[in-house]
Image (cartoon, rainbow, N blue to C red):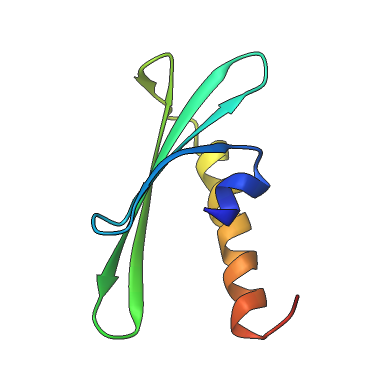
Length: 83
């Protein structure tokens, strides 16, 4: 959720049981992003992101690359106890 908020998304819905977060970004246009997190074994997680613009899937990789770069940085900082 923090990674989405860092990218100026507003959290619409979060479901801990399903491992999903849906958020919207409004800045002249509306982008909706859904992120799903699932465990993979005991020490790993699978994170999937799906973006939509006007109810059409976003195929441009830049939005996804930006999201995963922010997520990677956040995970690194958390793992190394850096604020």
